[in-house]
Length: 330
Length: 272
Image 1 (cartoon, rainbow over the protein chains, first blue to last red):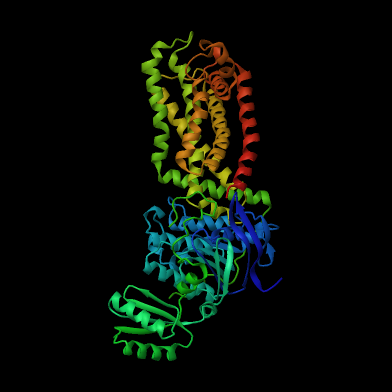
Image 2: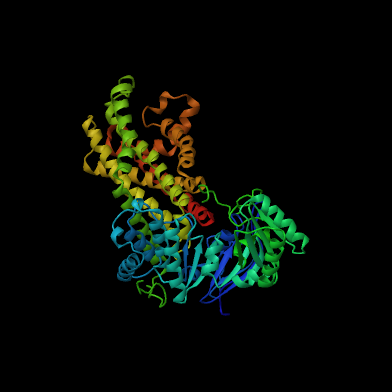
């Protein structure tokens, strides 16, 4: 057995004509967080569903804690927790009853279940809502309960499938805090997300998938370094000036210049030196920028340069590759 | 921030045999479904509204036009109503499972180390429990409109047992429909065309020998008719006394469970 808590090699899965996973490889060392990043329909959820024994695979290898998910799914299930983008809790049960149900179904003794349920309700600030049907919970509360339900049996490996999709910023920050704590305690986490900020913040390593294939992998800084450059953002207050600045900079030999409304963006290799050049060039052209900023590329930039489309808008021509018939995705 | 331990040390687990776990998991799921029923008593009320309307309609509107020799029509009618109630009630099993699927609950259950048959067994057993209440309620309604058991307490209990077992067997068929339909509306739409001929081309409301010959063969031996005739045999006796129908109905029910329960578990395993 390796040190990888999750290991995936050459994983393939199709739903009829739609290829959801076209040979995906990744590994998650024990105690680390892997961010599986990609737009809707990229195959993220399919990979999670195969690893959590919900779905069979067509080809390739998938193991959790050294156990092949097909050979011994029951043992795998004992060691994993799954929280999804659709809060899978029973609306008609109370928060406590939901946790009790999951506890019993993970085969914990009744007295342990009771203590564990109350402990988790307290930790997720749901004690006041303990005896209320989940029907009366807000979206954020449901999501917290869903995550609590995934933790009842203290799984060493946790799958979080878009845990914060559709949440308001405050609930999102709260969930991030909890996830960070879990990681601090040594839980291995596979996190899928469409939010680059989320992967940036929580994940040790990131695998970017698009249309069922891995298109990039590395740490967040490695991915940013891959596009290799510093970005200089210049705000010129109006679009006409932005256009003039653009041509001035282009003729001066600074290439890879883009304008967006009244701002000009250029990617350069040596940030501070280029900034001086830019200021001189603009000065000579009689242009006065409102602001000039140097920034490292965000994962959004990485994603755009890798896939040619932005992370959060799904490609229009790709049908849902999750093979599910659910209410409209968030 | 609280310092409550979220993960770390693994918790002790109980050890039981596979069968022991199947029973324990089924009990947990049954409990969950019954809590829902207790919390939403309107589900129970809704599932009795339709049969009550049928009782009133056939007792006071159509009943006068239907003549069954040698018996008060209300006594003839009520065993038919009991069968109709559990037959249409079986749709609820499909709807419940379709909703669990739609809400992602089945997905969670499938990621847990629980017995693979417990979700279905827990649903059908909870629905059997619901039928106990619904049938009891319909007996009370029957008494209010003049229905009288002719054979005594044992006949009554025997008839109830036959009808509950029949209802239980049907829930396994509708479990499959619910898992295939994946949402409540589709489950309902898929169920009705199956149910209508079974309930209406039967001995539930009229004597089969008033039907055209080609229909009589089906109407005589199909499971709803056999169940209705068995209940009449047990609750009314006399001209309806026919132990073969009781045996026949038990055979239908056991046969349906034997075929459709394993099939439903197979569909459940494959439903993703």
